[in-house]
Image (cartoon, rainbow, N blue to C red; front, side, top):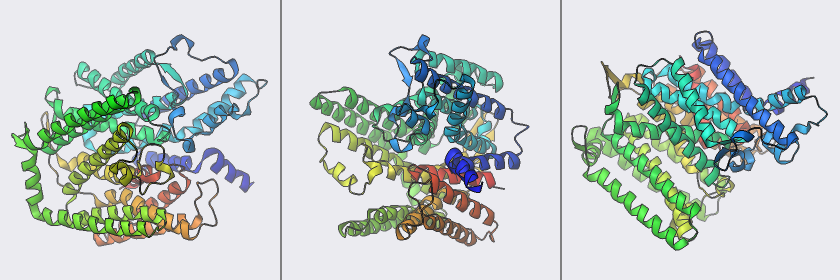
Length: 588
């Protein structure tokens, strides 16, 4: 009996889904939102509607041998993203569909029973995709007052709507025009539910901007890349990318809005850098995919690179921005000179240099690749904690923002030049020294995931925290004041300490294995919990909080250890964001 119950929970429902259900229940109880938030019921309805469309399409596609949407099918369509996701993360529905099994329902099975079984299987299979991003969005909305600002709130709502539609697009191919019209209808319904004072035309422009950014990223991830991204990573990257691109565009157009949040010089420069990287990467990817002439591709890439570099040199060094007619170079020099920031920057430089020399030494000794790669986790942990102890979170956020943009740009350059020239160029040879099987599908992403996973919880609180904004009538101005170091450490310690020691412990003690996991051991899971809990507790003690965060430390470590063990995906991005979500659930 117990064995059957265990198999039902772990194999049929999944431990990751069980963790998410626990977080949902805890959030509803602790935040007291079940009765007061009508959006919960609306979201439940949307998930059921989306799942129904998926099941009907799968049913008709298998047994009737026709598309469920013949009246909207044409050459210009979007969907069936499962064809572009990593094979390791494919769902049971997709695997059975490819094997023509579809849970082995025969034609003699009653329609209602077959439909219900397939509905439940599909809903459970996509449960994490249906609810994780809305849960995180709800927690952000409840914590940060900036989301009372209508443009920010609508952006959050739109991204969640597009994310749930992505689950439908995972299985179903739909005509683009019909898809856009259906979302315009959802836009009208959204405005009717969320009463806004902002101009309707501005709201519609925001909707179209977020829609365009999100779906360009989604299509690029699952169509242009060769089975590089899992479905959850694809949704997460599309959502975060759409937020960053929309915020970047907002920084350049805020004067046209009813309520204005004034960006500083750093926001303006970063916004232009982010938008230019997106344009440059998209332009080069287009020519790589559609250009057969390698010489012509090379010319186009060189021209695009020259224009990109020229624009950003002007943006960084020559442009006088409209906030006090300040140049970014002057702002950067003042930031470096301020309050001993130069000492911290010099410390980062020498620590990173010495650590990279040590890693190179290990590589030449042909040490185990897993151990070598984990040293990058420790290097990130060391440098970020230096900033925490020095009280330089603002400087850390600025530096991490530019380093993350640089990592993305380097990968774009590597991929472009690999295609236009040859795979033996120096940039490609340097970056492929430390890759494993997860990075052998065309793009090298694990180091970007690692930095982004540590960076996103930090930048979310730094940018969104209520204490960092001054509100005056219809103007909002940003002024960095306060830090929440335990929140920053929730994701950082999980991925840099817990994940690293879990890999080391699993390597030292590979048995016994945890069933239904990706080759994870019980000792590795135990190492994760103990090292994360002790490090968080020690950090809390050094912050002189008298162990008031012991509950949060324990829960983050426990949930993180289980999530890391049962996650069949690259955890560098998902694990720290999940830990960040856990912290928000239990934060007092």
